[in-house]
Amino acid sequence: MHNGELKHRLNEIIFGTETTEGRIFDVVLICLILTSVLVLMLESLDAISQSYFIYLRVAEWAFTIIFTVEYMVRFYCSPKPFKYASSFYGAIDLLSILPSYLSLLIPGANYLLIVRILRVLRVFRILKLVRYLGEANVLMRSMFMARRKILVFFFSVLVLSVIFGSLMYIVEGPQNGFSSIPTSVYWTIVTITTVGYGDITPQTPLGQLVAALAMLTGYSIIAVPTGILTAELTQEISRDRARRRCPHCHHAGHDIDSNYCRHCGGALDLESAT
Image 1 (tube, rainbow, N blue to C red):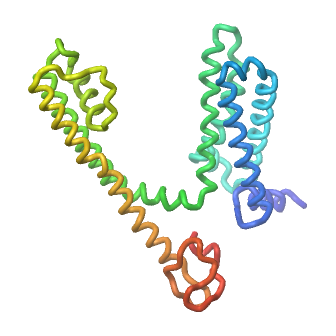
Image 2 (image 1 turned 90 degrees about the vertical axis):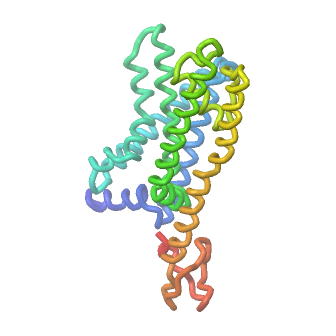
Image 3 (image 1 turned 45 degrees about the horizontal axis):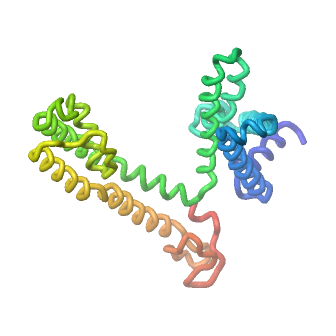
């Protein structure tokens, strides 16, 4: 097998999901990603880290080497290597291996805390799982279509937060904890999102009235982004079903998990919806 055939074969396995080898590769890679994240979580527990430090460190470097080889093979077999390297997933692939190597370049026990902070970046590996979820594509397209409406909504919430925060700064003042307008805006955001830390509370009757209005406003608007995204998701699912067409009778509108046409009974093309 010459170089061109090898690159094409590796590309089918690593970047594609149509072949049996490609699906096996995806499943194995997902298992490795989840296991590496589990190792990271266990390493953050002092009791486990002290007792099994060597094993966890060996496991971490084993995963680092595996993901390094994977990154190099992806770069090698990609039709446009530098485009892959500069893509979102290419950056995630690189971020998943860099912290371990960076830790080798920072000597000294006093830098240990910095090294541990750098190693936290390994959790970005879990973002690589998104590429293997077919349903995630529908969700991502829905979020993209709803981006302008959601941005307008958040801008409106920000304006309301500034208004309520300014009122609370005037009504309550620094003597009651509202020391500045930004601090008052912070209190407003905590209040209308129903988080309610309680670190700053209104003390005067007028301030409590403004707080009550902010709370009611929060309950009124908290479901708005959910409704926007749900509407776009419903439309995207309808569009996705319309794209799934039977190769025999050419009828569309099949469910995503349908294997056979509801009109003629013929087998559906599993790739017709992608």
